Image 1 (cartoon, one colour):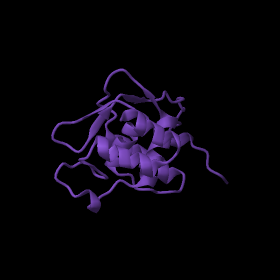
Image 2 (cartoon, one colour):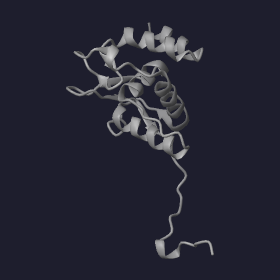
Image 3 (cartoon, helix red, strand yellow):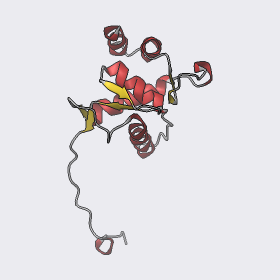
Image 4 (tube, helix red, strand yellow):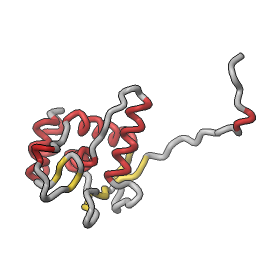
Amino acid sequence: MESSVKQAALTDNVVEAIKLVRIVEPALTNAGFEPKADYSKNPLVPDEVQATIDWINANTVRTKTYNPRMDSYSLKHKVEVYSRKIGNGMYIGNGAAIAAFIILGIPYKQILKTKNAIPQLKLKPQKKVKILPYSQWKWPK
């Protein structure tokens, strides 16, 4: 089953991949894990899932352990912040992050009694930027 999910993602057919995600996690909606929710009222959005996949591929590395500092909810916010920086301003659902974990084959586990999941991911090391004190900022004349 998992290889079918990966194969659909490799062909860039996120809509097909989402159909397979729904088989793997039938309780997953765009808000996250909601066992009693009606999926038709809050479905996964392909553009949100694709944006999250792209962000994960560019900004994270896989780990062998689950990272509680990088849950699906915090990751969705990181993707939204990036989206605003590039001028898109896209909303990202918590479920889109979980669907991206599944499509990319990233191990994850649901946080009990929540809609969230913890993946085996961490942020890539970022280059340190020296931040000057405000008094040293140079303003255009």
